[in-house]
Length: 201
Image 1 (cartoon, rainbow, N blue to C red):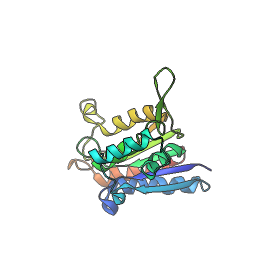
Image 2: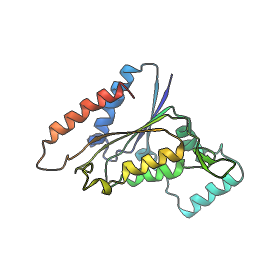
Image 3: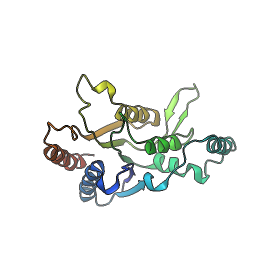
């Protein structure tokens, strides 16, 4: 049995196109992997605090004391122990909503999600072999002339290297706010792709 961690950063909730796409993927995945456990973490509801000075000071003190079992590090432990990870986050301001950045800062903990070897080189400590980002974009940021502006998937791909997760994947519907496009057709195609991807994830 594999443990799949679903991180829901869809700020618009039930109105989110990204969440609709993620739900389709997860439903298809559950149907094809009935023995796997899917745990959802809705970080919009959790209201995690940013790393304000006092929050960071508490975290540093706990880390220095070796208290990695403190509840402050629960999210990091959960992330590190998952077998597969799915993150659903819309494409906002060329990356993703701030709530996801807050979560990522919370789980990036030395000796839990990453660490250093005896030579001082960084090494990933996460168990997951795959991480999937599910997102929707109003424009098209996969084109040669626009791909350089896309920061969300690129950041998560880099973090996968830091965390030791070898396989980063992307499920994306683009151009959904372009009046020249058939939005319904684009989303329908992405939903079909979600079902297909679930079978091989």
